[in-house]
Length: 390
Image (cartoon, rainbow, N blue to C red; front, side):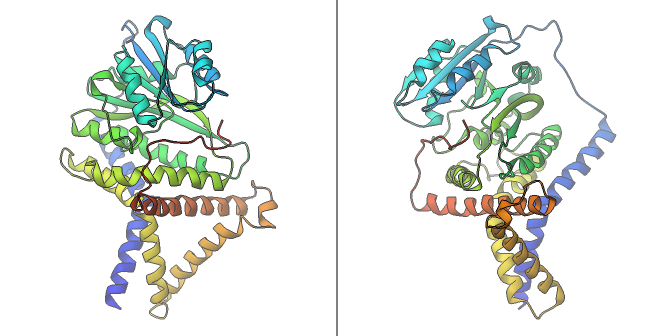
């Protein structure tokens, strides 16, 4: 039983640390750093010339939204002569390219189907901006978003900047917004102390000379930040560069989206150098282990904690409590999807808490199933639009 107890306490401790303790640790380090060094915020000179920006949107069958997307970008508070809008149509079978041209995109590439990464690579080859900004076809940027992204590059050490994306939920069942607000808090702390460990596809930018062509099975969100650090750049989070996207309308579609993302996460985690300490300072290495490695291992740590706590029932009250708590959590996540609970108002606190439990379970389950998919050879670089997010 000694080995079982060690496995239980180790897995439980790693879960608590990665989900809660890591954020508290960053907050303490940030507080001590601020007290020691003071605030170090910097802004661009009002007389500084704005850099030329190539703003790239990779799109697949986005005829319903691409015109609105281009119009939103053309309306940004940024000099039109310093903004180049490029739409890279990744083998679209609809009128995406025609709608993008009609909306005023300067360059529209009609490419064979090869996946988002290769579409972005092709757009970069056609770009002439000193900065390369990227967005999804279903994103909506605030008018000053590009100015705020560009402002971060006044620091010559910054090679990558991700903005703040807010997810709009019109149905109330998907709790991604709760998770994302916590995630953004962690990224603010990481950015302040060193560099972020991941970005988002809705709003981000790089210097042209810092751009990387990565494995098409991977994505910029996870590949860019750690590679920037390894190459001597900083990867930061601009909290005031804001965008919004519709979130998946149901937990089923959210599971499908997370599962697809997980199929790209695992090869990036194991085969791209992300978990190699080479090129990391100790603090950033701690961030990678805490926020990336342990977070992605969470479903397996939960499985070990549940199994060992069940085996250890009878060895002490703590194991009974832990086993009961985990079973109750699983039941709450499952029951909230079934009548009559599924018909109750989602704003009720008990229902909201159960929905959060459901979201946590689904995202972790998607990570595990995504690993299984990848091991079985499901490694396509192409993507499909998630229903309800347009």
